[in-house]
Length: 346
Image 1 (tube, rainbow, N blue to C red):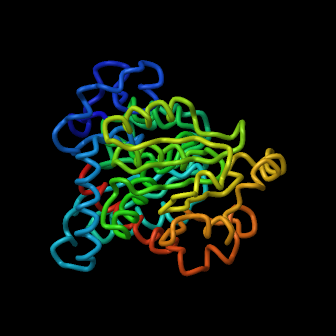
Image 2 (spheres, rainbow, N blue to C red; image 1 turned 45 degrees about the vertical axis):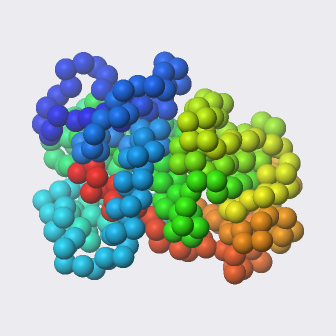
């Protein structure tokens, strides 16, 4: 996570990339960067869960709890007055768009929704020039992008905070919100057992990082060839050593859920993977979360899904509409965590 020096200042070097971002770590193999311990989050990027220390993530969760309890209170209505957030969407969005838009609005700030087709990006303007221009207009950028490389390029050349609203590598805001939901439900994160079944995608990547950072045990069950990124697994295991948790990969969904307190899944075919849809559905058919899977989990286990759900594929109606499902509480919490992230960074 990179610390900014304020608006309207061009970077002195061609790369201000966060030394703690996963993109940087995968090239430099140095998870011990001192910049992770920078006091305070103001002015910093959030490109990866790994941009936060466990202490900083706890600060965000505790702030989210306060904000949820005090939603509508006058004390927060001007907290981001005069602040603006450019929201760049290269992919469709419901929860990310609504939660960030409402978060800024309820805190007194303003949002500007952009898509590449509505900007000069569609006519060849570089990401670097776009980042420099937006840095002179707005307080921060939230980008939901097709490529993590686009995101890191944006952050490299902007001198305002950049937030990852989703990339092909990670979905950190979702994972941070998921940690809040699990904490809210169980009163702790330490030693909670989380089982993720399905495609080892961006959600799985960020969930592994967040869980291992906070001391929760995570087991990911995916078929061969559809597991999480190895660089993410390696980093999550380093976090787990420090937090006293475990990270397990398996090709057996029933093994993953054996002692699970949380059973989590996501769509089998992510946006942009439509050409692989039939092959992925075939490979993932054994990983559907149904009543049998939930009965194999711990007695008090809950079901989570970041949504949207493809009912009848990764999850059955029986599960997602059942009494163990907390998917709508999970969705609501995106708003409160988005507020906490924005207040921390801005």
